[in-house]
Structure formats: C-alpha cells, structure tokens
Length: 253
Image (cartoon, rainbow, N blue to C red):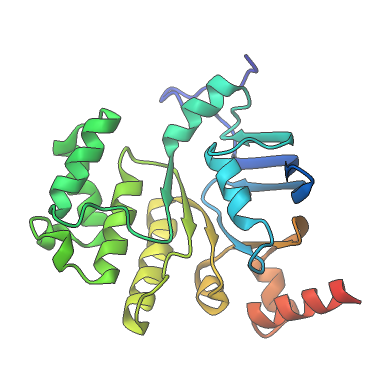
C-alpha cells in the first residue's frame, strides 16, 4: 500500500483532493481522453469546461471510479492504491444532471434510504444536510410535489450525507428556470465558501460558473488545453465565455 500521512481524524494530510496523471481512456479504437494531467486542491471550486463530446463525462466517471482509465493514474486526497481510492471515494458526493430521488417518498424518506445503505446515523445526518440546502421546512413533503429546484437541492443534500469533502456536479442547473438557476448556483457557492467543500463542476453555463469558480480546467477533443485560475482569466478577458472563445480560436489556428 502506498503511504500517506494521516491526521488524528484519519484523513490524509494532503492538500490535493484530485490528482490526475497522464490519464487516457480508449473504447476500442476510439480515443476519449489522452494524457490528461491536472490537480484540484482542497477547498478549490474547479470548473470543467469543454464542448459536448470533449471527454468531460468520461473524466468524471474515472474520478468517481465508475470506469477505469486505459492508462495513467488517479489520486484522491493522496490515496493511490485501489484500497485507498475505495476509502477516499467515501468522501466524494456526486450530483448527476437529473434527479435520482424516489418521487413518491418524502425528502426525509429518501435520505433515510441512503443513510441505511451507507451505514450513516440518520438522526445526525438528515437534519444537518436538509438545513444546509434549505429544505428543512419541506422534509415531510412528497418529492413529487417539489419544484425542479427543490429536487436539485435534495440531490445535493444526498451528496452531502456523510459530511463528504468533495462534490462533483454534472450540469447542476439543468432544466431549471432563471430563479432556480440563480438559487442553485448561490447554494453551490455558499457550500464552497462557508463549508469548505471542494468541487469539480461540469457545466455549459459559463456566466454562472464564473460567479463561483476559483479555477477552470479546459478540455478539448479529449485533451487538456490548460488549467487556469479565475483571477488570471478575469485579468485576461472580460468574461469566462470570452476567454474560452479566444482559447478555442487559438486551438483552431
């Protein structure tokens, strides 16, 4: 087993939450990712930016352990071996682009099921996560009566169970109306700033991403173009959208 220093609370003393080293993925002859290397530090909110088919979803699946890279390595919180990665993934919450909640059950009942599956103390966890996402007043309502925005909040609450340190989002505001979009991005920003949650977010909503992100990873045709801080991006372009447009123009030359 590869070694890493352990704090008293059992968590590794490593400032890196995600580290990819020369990660490639092929499906037969089709190349999806090629030599992708970057690092996301703890408490960083990293935006994953790229066109459809760029490889973002595959990259997320590799980080989550849903699929294995064809080559290269993944580290989570300093863990490298299969055993360490399995342990570290208990600190990761995933919010997909569509709700996985049981519609006929209440918010509390949905969370009770997850707590039972994952061996968590529901009396401690459920009030905590419902309060964090602002659903504590609606905990007994059927999910079928929820707005799309409330369903997204429940998805985020589920991802927060177990006091996860890293949250991974795939199009978090997908299908929401303008007020719902604003509300979800405000919640995401608050969880990062106030709770210190590390985040990796894939989204095409560049204006909203720019309002919360601390850094951006740009992926094109399965390759890493660059990783840049939002401070540098703001210095070099009037918006994240314009920065991305210029970057893609340079790639096409």
